[in-house]
Image 1 (cartoon, rainbow, N blue to C red):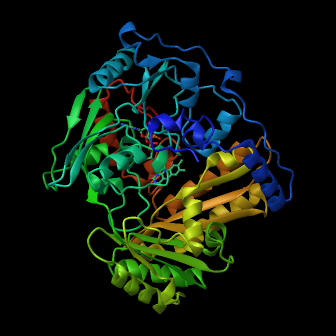
Image 2: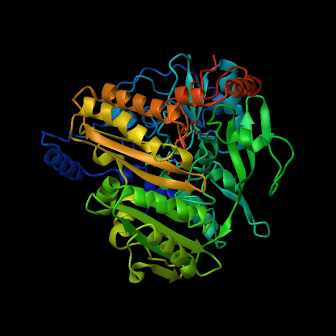
Length: 541
Ligand SMILES: Cc1cc2nc3c(=O)[nH]c(=O)nc-3n(C[C@H](O)[C@H](O)[C@H](O)COP(=O)(O)OP(=O)(O)OC[C@H]3O[C@@H](n4cnc5c(N)ncnc54)[C@H](O)[C@@H]3O)c2cc1C
């Protein structure tokens, strides 16, 4: 197994799967996946070989790099290829097909804030689109190159990657935006701390990306959105620096950090932030509770979250998801409950949560509740909970990329009073389109990734074999149905995958019109030439 704990060991970014070349599956694994799909769907599936970057045609760079920036800006072909796309499956699919019709013209790697200022000044003076780039794991076309600009420069933040200060008294750290999840955790671990923010894309994504997309970690309740951990931010805009004051809380008018969080690279480039950190957990408790119906399971989940026990994990899998990801029989739902703390044993809390689950039909024996009081934790690694954990962590887009599978997710949140009618509407509308475009052999499943006292955040996954050559149209028809029904039925267009270009229409529908007008005014003030990530959130021109 490749040791990816240091930057040097990870190698180059992959152009066709998430993460690095060391994350790429082998051709033998892809052939095995093709055979398994052929068996499941009763059709022929082959795994085409992975092309080499040398075989791709790219248009000539449209920008001339100034001499003074030549040490940190490049138009190297490989660099342009690996920065053309984010992490959506269709983007990775296009990359595999060698479709690089809109690559960035140059990639900048600033190592200091002064260098970043020089790069942004250059883009602004030439009116080139400037695209901030963290880990490139966006699944909403957040780093794509807009067609209507005469030049585009991707600004890769990966060299601004240090934990600069740890304030042990206030439990906060000043951290640069380009740091990847594992590096950040390794550096904080040295002083016994953690940010405790683990999106599924944690190995390949960055602090800056998390902050501007308002990412959701995989803890299900309490502090889980990155917003909760942001103490202050520092962001470079074409009009200058915007830096907020470090405060544990403040009622002084609208919060500047709230403008930065969710701005998705359209208002400025975040270079660093003070983040609230925590002691690393020692006490843990985990249980997997089985329910014979979806209704019993989500009712129990609501009662647990409303009891304000604040489990770290409260992840609910519907029967179809529990079968696929945890190996259950396809009829039963699975509720994974997890507690953890740096200071307090968690055994009593999990017993209370399990009692509530049992009151609503949950099945689990006492011996299946695992507790641990060691930092070397192994709870939750066995049985259905362990199966789910492995499938969650082992996710790899490259295995099925290019095999004809249309598989994607969409996620949202809605209030409990709107549930389960909301779920029924989504399954009906999206299910009909799935049947139309993929036939009967498709799947649509749901899990709750995050759960609030006033409502769940449902996360839907669909899959089926597409018609060769028609994947884009087929996916678009399904995605349109999902986007429309989520907003019409009273949910949000996205709970944690952000807006990007893919959700811009739904986001606009969901916002009060005046709010969008205010945001456009902010954009005009901070970025008058509309160079920053044009097309994300809205079209600034
Ligand atoms: C397999 C997989 C699992 C995922 N799981 C989760 C999950 O559990 N939770 C979740 O919230 N999301 C998830 N995502 C989505 C994605 O990982 C998040 O949106 C993440 O926050 C993006 O971080 P990044 O560093 O990769 O940013 P990028 O993808 O590089 O960029 C995302 C957006 O932020 C902008 N940006 C990046 N850095 C900066 C900066 N320093 N300043 C200003 N703008 C910047 C970019 O221009 C772009 O618009 C997942 C994606 C994948 C592929």
